Length: 232
Image 1 (cartoon, rainbow, N blue to C red):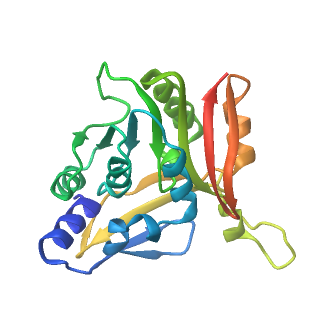
Image 2: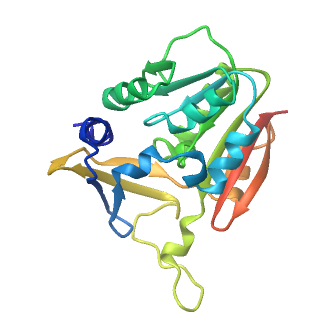
């Protein structure tokens, strides 16, 4: 099952304004209107707009979805490649006019290409939902970046989801970090498998990066922010 991919292709084929249902084991369930995936630049959260504004050089959009960010970057004249493991999303992006689309797993993709900016939008830096996979994401990213390259991402501190009236946090049992979540997607009564994700607050990013990298907050709209990571 490819919930996002199938929903995107249905939307393109007949403008079917359905919803993707998001079930969580730790947070409140949610719904995503399919048309939200197809937002234009002025419909994007400002944290995303800011990342697009400062993207430079040759850009790799990791987990690029239906290509909305890539299309904006193409219009700006940047050499942009979209990478996603979803066949449906890659097909939808190609149909929308994204010039360079690669269907592959970010960690397994074999390439000699180098980039100046890696883009992780919609909390994409939280892929895999573990501290170990965050470290792996950073290492892999800098394997793909030219010297002086940058990682741009948006993330959200979701601790407020567990905040009580007195300001203390009430965490679910066995939750090691407030930003860890487990999701399952359903589209037209077809279910994807459960998967792990993470929403990293800025302090946790600093802790996980250690001394080898620079981190700065480019823009903040609490609890969301735009971050940039570079190598020292």
